[in-house]
Image 1 (spheres, rainbow, N blue to C red):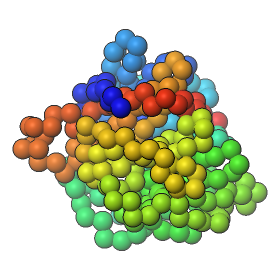
Image 2 (cartoon, helix red, strand yellow):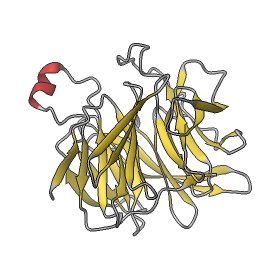
Image 3 (cartoon, rainbow, N blue to C red):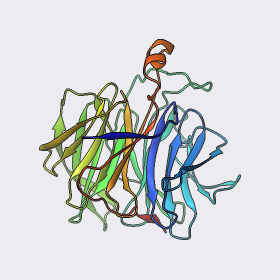
Image 4 (cartoon, rainbow, N blue to C red):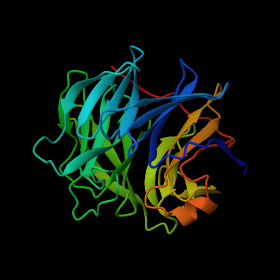
Length: 296
């Protein structure tokens, strides 16, 4: 299947890509370079904004702005120079940072944390313990823990119509399915649907209109995998990048799968012969996606 390099972003850690249906453009972040990117794919117009610290995720708001995860704060942002704090996360855990962040069907910003693996100057730091956790951040700024489990690296947040939530622990190479109870605001009934798949590790995911999950395989996985809700592997698409990180469906018909990637930890010799690392890619997989949820 043809894979196109849409934008040679050269991201150190491109992540959290979403499609804004209203503006007909992609948004994503580069965590290490402290930058939010926007690309209007129809025209090729690219714009970027600096952030005051590491930026880990981005979502859309119903009022037209964005919600952004920084290192330890969730902020409201209106595509300007001001990031307005909404919530502090894990103020009692200074060694942690935010990682995954996706607006859920309930209008909350679902976020995951992890032990910080990035030094102040942007170089890698070893992870030594499972300190990550999953939360919901509401419009009032409340941060609600979804369960008591601890994760190595929280990744992937997608939802099915019948109330299931899918998430992953990158370090454990596992993808899970939970039941979410809106009355108790808790995740229960954990089931491991994919474990030990031997191409890379699970990073970000999106769901298509048929209820299948598309999961990026980071750390030399060099592919994206389409999974049935029970974890059965339906399709594997090879990618011209070693570390695909995040994906979303976009375009006027939501029929293009866009994929961000990273060049974190790669040496100069590898990058000289693989300059596409850290780029933004596009695939026409023959299925359509779903519009992004909006924070309210």
